Amino acid sequence: MAYLARRICRDTVGSYVVSTVRLGEVYEHYIEVPTWETLVFGDGLWDEYEVRYKSVEDAIAGHNNIVEEIKKNAKPIPKRVFLED
Image 1 (cartoon, rainbow, N blue to C red):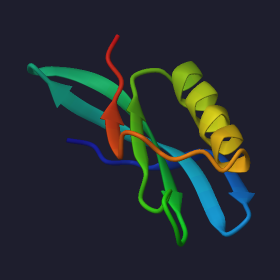
Image 2: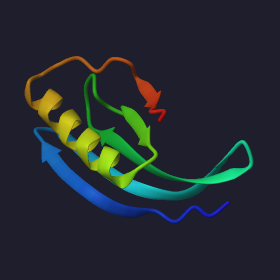
Image 3: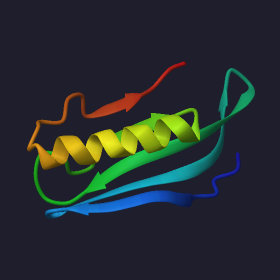
Image 4: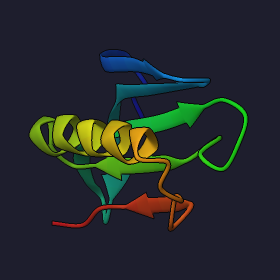
């Protein structure tokens, strides 16, 4: 499995860093699926919040949504999610 990370978005919101990268190809039912991941780093409720996406468009939109939710001081629920088609 290829695991080549390439950052597509990065924002700092207060004490948090929100980073979205391409993980590379992952195997799902023996089919290679491109995967992107948004991960939040920092102290507090959002630390280690993680979401994975199957398209770069969804990854960018998801990244921006997370940034906006952090700015609103919203609580992160659920902790980890893999978005399906």
